[in-house]
Length: 162
Image (cartoon, rainbow, N blue to C red; front, side):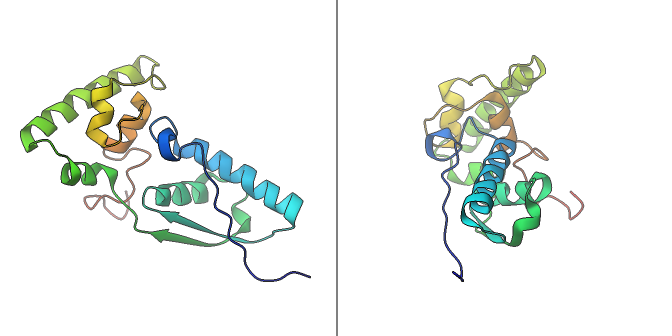
């Protein structure tokens, strides 16, 4: 019988250029499929999930909504990040210009979501505010920049209850 631990690094569809069009729920579904495969094809019964940076949100979300949570023996969060708070620290724009642009695109994202267009891509200037020049949907822009959104788990202004 084989014993010990193995390392499996999934590349979720939200990785790399897909970060702006994915969601935590889609990532949780992909982790479920991975764990199903590991259980049925490799006989794995216990796992430890490790998230790094924004991947920490994936681990927390999976623990909340995952179908195979019973397999998770440990969850490790390495360098969790508040994307909302990091934006102002990493922006190359001046404070007022950045704040005005962020406000403009947050309003646009909110309107798009209200109109049922949350999965549509925002203008390129919105994605440039976030860093990489990759497409970002209205839903994802809102989630990364808003307070108490799906991705806003580690901001310093959140209470323990939140």
